[in-house]
Length: 127
Image (cartoon, rainbow, N blue to C red; front, side, top):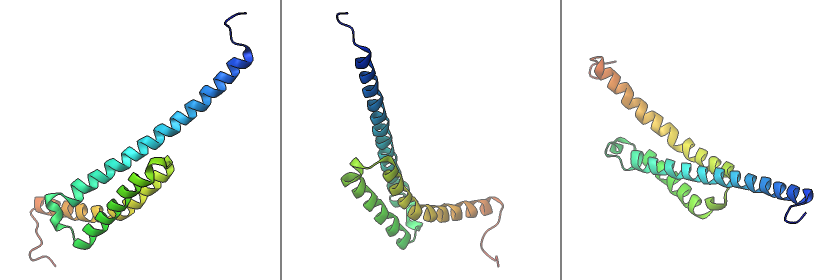
């Protein structure tokens, strides 16, 4: 019949569409992971490194976070464009391993002191 695809042509087109769909999913996963890492780095810059109360952060901790953020941002700009979603996630984990304990320590301390103040307690005269 004129204008109709053969069964073999239809099968070939379906296989090609399936391959393209898989590539599209991989591309979207890479794009999403890069965007998530970029947002996390921006969040660290604004909430930890530039925030007014970040002056309470010890210089050693501030520099450790700043360095890991700089390294990850450079990696994302240079290498990250072609990285897999898993590679980007591994890079984010490196950043989280440095920033996470510092953030937990600082915000944990702040929450602890706030709760003590709410209870009417303070550190003066405490043993």
